[in-house]
Image 1: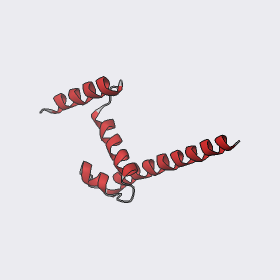
Image 2: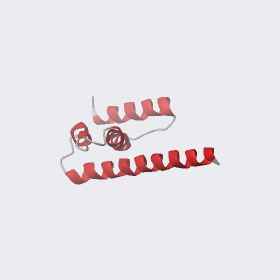
Image 3: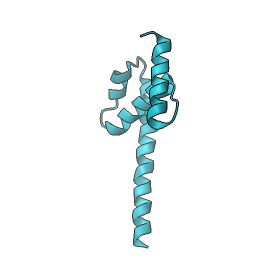
Image 4: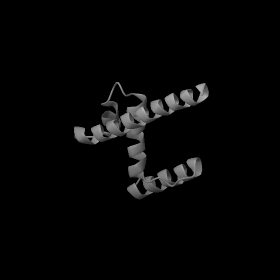
Length: 85
């Protein structure tokens, strides 16, 4: 497939599936962040998935995922606290 075709397929598929037109770059970003969130104990998994050559790129996704995981944990604590009130 040519680059333009891949871009069109990703955009059309994400629009049809989740209702948002996602660019290939954002698609890769979300893939790396998802891998880092789900496989946090293996931070280089995103690097292998996306063939990153520089660790700082993977670290940025890993840091974002760590923040998201912390926010979700905090949300669960607040919800539990609200239940006990």
